Length: 430
Image (tube, rainbow, N blue to C red):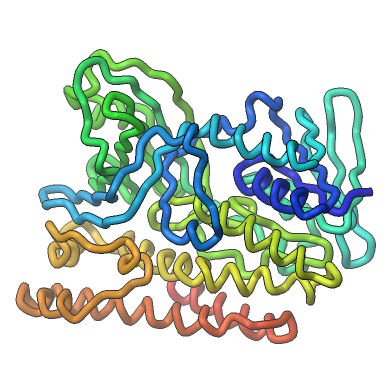
């Protein structure tokens, strides 16, 4: 019998195992991968630093390959929009291994090559998980079960369908990406900027990116909502992006496809004896596909919730939902609406809106908090009514989402009423 069993040794799973083991909890962490493969994942390898210092979190220096100073967003035929913020480019396998070792060194028991496949229930409470190893099936009992199994959400999706936490990820809310890590032969890239490109001719309803891990090493890839893809992602990468002379004679160090959730935040990520974190709780920023920072933040919030809880029923674990909504969930909901707004427009409609921001440099914090100031509204007015109308429409949608998610309930007692309101908004908006 453990205090905590964690399914999945991704970033969120390793960090929460480390945090709780450090506090004296008896933790069992399992993963389907071999121990030496933990951390190896198809990823953009970019960690935005905002807010992590408030947690006392600093990525290990040995896993940082570069620190960029801004994200740049490009649209076809326009000057870039620059968002100033600290972005850590990671050696993703080393990053994952570092936190796996931190978890084990602080007392977590780690079992590799072990696949979680089902919860163990006792009435309306989760009391552990069933898992398979190479040779047998095992049952791991715990006071709290953590689903950190990523997009597979191995435990959460196998909970009773009428539980709030078990809501499945719709195919429309999944994105598929293809990514390569390339060692350049001669050309050097600017390490100050992580570049994201929106070009409907290359990636309809999606984007591609070029992130500098070093001046001669880049993470390059593209992705889009799965329901919009009727073409070969890899072929598009080679034809439209890797044809750039900077990639001539470059060497492929890693490649692969990946999948991530791009949905509004999961309305409820808890049940009695259970918390879902990271990708398993759909905590990726649905507009820019950022998943590492939300995984770290959710692990810290979950660890704090468990540490402070006198009991591990739904009522006592509910503060995890509340705190995540306050720290990131509200923003993710606004980004979900913001992204959907853009997807509804064709490029000729998007371009006038983006032109208001074109060539500007802004703080990432203001972008993430949707602080659209009077100056931009004035610029829209000066550029013409069409731009002003678009901005007003965008602001109206964002305000509607904000008003709903700011009222997220402090306890499960009023959750159903709130959930119906939120789901009604997304149904009408979709």
